Image 1 (cartoon, rainbow, N blue to C red):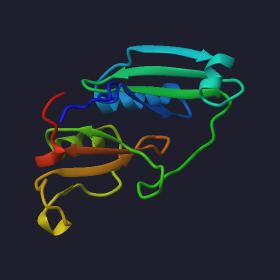
Image 2 (image 1 turned 180 degrees about the vertical axis):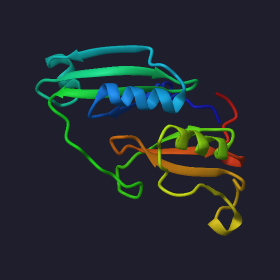
Image 3 (image 1 turned 45 degrees about the horizontal axis):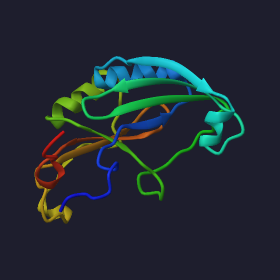
Image 4 (image 1 turned 90 degrees about the vertical axis):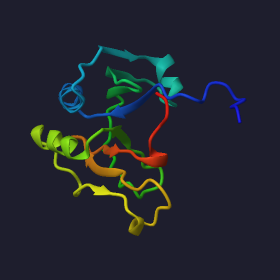
Length: 162
């Protein structure tokens, strides 16, 4: 069945609000092995209105991955407040990075000083799935507590094209 509603078949970016832009740039560059492509700032009443604010000033950086961009955002005006979400809380979101080898990815996390939430698991029948066996996942957080995941996908978790 072809999608008849045009425009919602691709994701362009995920935005992550951070406390310190420079610190977060260093984290995401180390994590992905990719340098940011742009550092800039935007603000004023027109931009603020798009977000339901009276005024805003946002320092940001763009990081281009193979299939998705990450916008790293530091709100100067209004100053950001710390939020904290567990993956099980309503409206919580997470960003998942696809990897070929979960063990190599775990080693990379350790090399750059990231402690995962727990040990990775590889999906098996006992996990209640009907398919996707062999898919491995692990969860971790960025310096500001953003929920992140790595996945080595199999079966229905593996995308055909990107």
